[in-house]
Image (cartoon, rainbow, N blue to C red; front, side, top):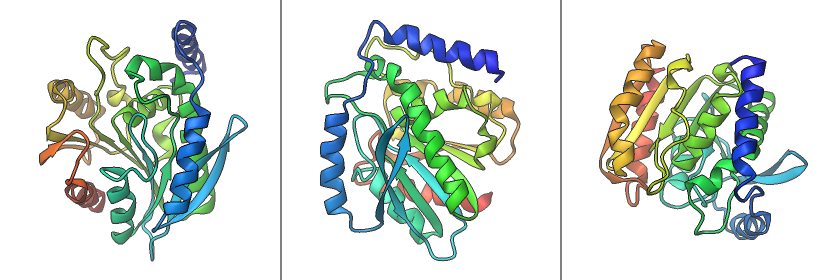
Length: 257
């Protein structure tokens, strides 16, 4: 994306934000961080800074690591969320990947997809900070893994920054929104040249399943022969009791790179 196009995209997010809530709920984020840090069993709390705000990440180190997986959780959750994120950040370590699980901006529990769109610029800054930390402090490849609203945030970053700063991208449950709140713009999957894995659940949200053929078309248009689309059998959007199956699918794909 050119510099002018980047400015235009960020300006469009700003225009959308002026009619909605703009700032993330930092008090709720702090409460979650306080609870999470005291309860971490695997890994260490690492606080990074973006836009003069310190945010929590959880770094878990692997022996003889192949690289680092930067993990983005879904809407309103946190970097040690039990259903999808914790199994990923711990399970991938056992397969030889460092993991850096990132606290993304949050709002109150009732907030919807459109409420979160104005937070995307804030999310972009956190993604950039996490990737920079992985590149500067850790060895090996960097893979970005994003679930649900985290995938919307990752795709907003993809429209402003080059995916060449990472080595692969995994999107989980891409396209999840709320009733009568369609996506504001299509995912730029056709412009992502690094390997892409599109993962969705057999019993995912209807929009995620309905959009799967179009996502696959865009991925194939990007023409990376290592990219793929995989369905996790028996799972639903939040991968309740299916976190290990999700981790296995992603690990198998990463081994193929």
